[in-house]
Length: 411
Image 1: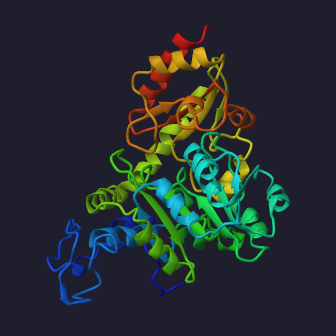
Image 2 (image 1 turned 120 degrees about the horizontal axis):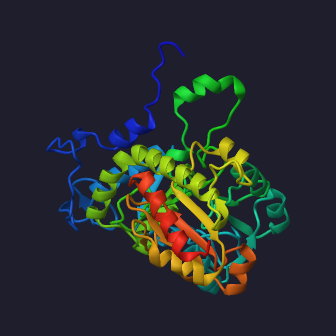
Image 3 (image 1 turned 180 degrees about the vertical axis):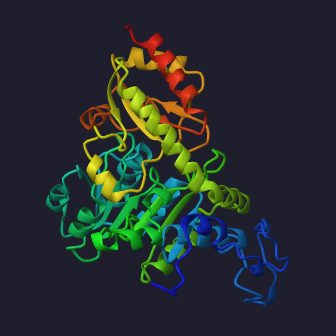
């Protein structure tokens, strides 16, 4: 490799990809916010440049799309006005009579969209336990066109084998494999070029979903990428030349485009993603280990713990484990509710991936739209609590959890 120019690191790309000052007439180092809805045309039907209407294209949005596509190692990237808008945009690639297979432990909002909306348009749906990839093979049908994977999953933090699942799905032609990469973020699905130089002889594979065989890497940008709890946005990243024009058309035709100001906020937030993710993981691992020792908790779910059932797979497939932890408190709804009522630093709120620590009760909050019998079959019980560990002092966060547990569960 001597004399060859190495690709930029994740940190360098996060700060510089798509941000070249030369693209702006002002040579602004910080990309400007272009708020204009319309762009003057040279003559009827002949724009001065590539922009003519805000829904069809915007410089601030394009800047963000180029940056995030680089971080996902994708040829194409589009951002939309919410994570669920991203799901809807992908589903618009299908037609009546097509079949979708979704991981069973999927985010409640995605499950609600699949079950209550998508199926109204004649699209068939099957939920599949993908911890064993052979279950996917058994669920495949001749009309299967989309396989939806979420790893780590929400809220049970299960880790599934992306490559094995993608290989099985692609045994059949014209099947799109989508990986929801939200909990990991692009940072923990990334290995530096220097890393590959070190381990090349070990034949290790890269962790990014697209390089593991997925056709689309999907993100709820509202979470870790935005990182500050002030933007709702989704992203779709892929390398499919054939699908690119259709997805770009859907972005425009469906109309779920984010505002320039929101794009600016995410563009600013992503520049610290690598720093934030390292701190999220450091705090979460310390908290997970402390919770595992707490007698008032019966189970802790965090892929970075040796006790996690897919710990070895997570080590192979990911570079880190982010800040998401779920645990089962001893008792039931009463104890869980008391715990959530007594935390002080952790904020009782939905969402995740922000700088402040959040806690929530999946069964009656993020996954309340899933019927109770389905929740119970999945393991989303009344005793399950999900944490989004933020960037506060880890010792203070641990102390907060422990005092709330003492008040919630009898010793």
